[in-house]
Image (cartoon, rainbow, N blue to C red; front, side, top):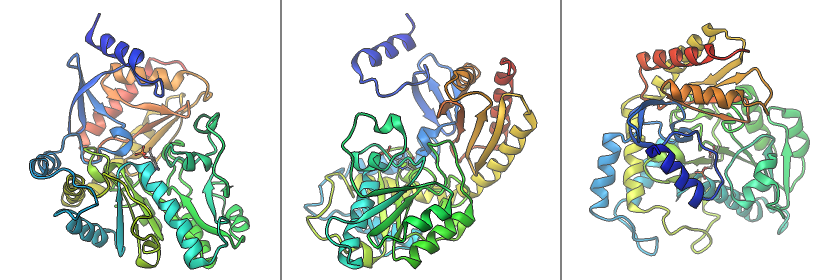
Length: 406
Ligand code: PLP
């Protein structure tokens, strides 16, 4: 039995079956590349769902991790720590908010944003107790907690996990008229949105829509909550995807690449009139704001800025889509994306195995990617990728496609 098969069998036998991975066992990563336990090298075109924007094991981020790990990893928020204040100042300056609330996973940060929004709704907007409504968009993905899946429209995320959180409204993503109708209700506290839906298959509603959403929210005194857990930190060619629309969200949610894929680090940012609605004892997390996370996240953001990774995402994304569009294989229904958040939509039914089988072929040829929603393959390499690596990836995709009949 190969080492790969042995390790997959262990996961199958002892791990919960809540994932269905591509059968490759990765043991090492550097930059845009990873290696499996058999020694095969791959281009990583998923980047841990955009958590590894800075590339695997970025030496500066790993150094920040190890330096801080030798000093202090965790003290909890029962006391102050030497890294937190500087990190908070740094983040507020970079993103242009008065305050940050640090958490760990993306889902926790989204939950935090929902709680903050409700608090604001009661304390500032004057919504009657227990009547605050939050609007979500169809096709959204904001994580896996009960509150979050209550706003999901995805059966596989929701089924058999009820009862769900009440007071959630759903509007069609990209349809401003739908939002216009629902936002009239005075009990609406917030509108939660991804500027590009990653998990749904790189669905881009356009800048005019996002701008119109933000204006509608302002007009109706509703908080515009921008979930940039997947789209943020340079991924789409700007620090935030919402920057393309020139919109400043009331609440900004960050995660994933905030740590360069080194630790779970997430954050919620807002101005004082919103953030100070939460008082001591009302929300928190043992690990949120820990010194290790502060050191790692500071360095991870500095790397994005110093290495101009958003610009590179922009340039490499343009090149990637242009080269992919030249392939014109009948299995390609559409190539779309922004920066290095891209997708190939496969010309086959979502229930078909075509995209999955194509990803197996990609792996055989040295590129890792995974389908979402059956027939869409997300292609999102680390933002440190270079031109020749983009061309290698396109050659692998081409070679793999050629083994398939439409
Ligand atoms: N929000 C968005 C837009 C995401 O894409 C994700 C994860 O994919 C999350 C939130 C949840 O993040 P986490 O998996 O770290 O909880």
